[in-house]
Length: 311
Ligand SMILES: O=C(O)c1[nH]c(=O)[nH]c(=O)c1I
Image (cartoon, rainbow, N blue to C red; front, side):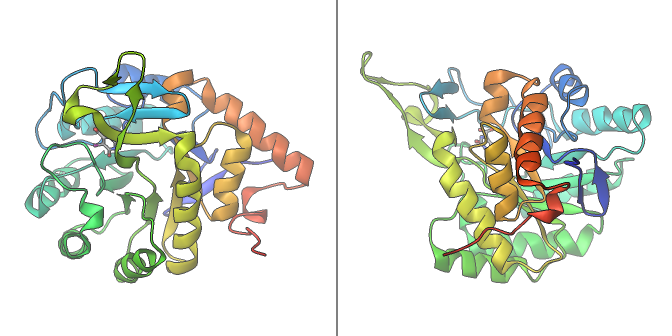
């Protein structure tokens, strides 16, 4: 039974990896993912210069998942490009993802120029959905901004590039954003980022759980799965077949991975469950996915990918 997959023409031995922002901040964390059963890694979304991020506490586990308002802490794009450059030499033939995010089109372009000037041979993930920088809206909800950014990006950048989108909650919004995305040579769309600006409360302390933004933060984990599956399924039906889909959100076990692929995902990313369980989670999820496939008689993920039945 094989859980291998392919993205942008690159082959991967597995279809499960980390979600940007989880277990990918430092070289030590990236090493741990690199040595795990994960297909590959994506780096923490990088900015032009290093950022401290928001004041702590800025992450909290909750009964059904997590809330975070990290505020884009990262060591800067150069740090991650150096790490991936070394990884490409140490493990040639493996493809890595670098996530990046600018605060405006000019910064997005500057980041991509920096990638072009490096020896990076992998896939860029442009994050259009960070919900936690005070005063900055989630770009993915501004359709004009998304159009402007992608026009500028694809004027410049010709190597494989995907985008990380926020969750949408309206079928007309799926129609509108998909019509925009279909105009561009995107390698993939990654749906979804956390549900922005949720609020979790500690009733005993009568308090919010995290410090930034009065406790408002991105919601991840089990809460997210119905929304994540809806976005994967909606985009699979609307996007050109040349645009692949990475499914992210709410995965806790092998059946959840199976569900994302059934909805149309070519790769599945995990965040909250990885944060809570550590990199051993990749071996567990892979084993559980293979058990589901064995029980159903599937030898590879293409046999059931996108085959969700409607009634
Ligand atoms: O607060 C963050 O750093 C963060 N947190 C998220 O939940 N999603 C994101 O894309 C980001 I850039």
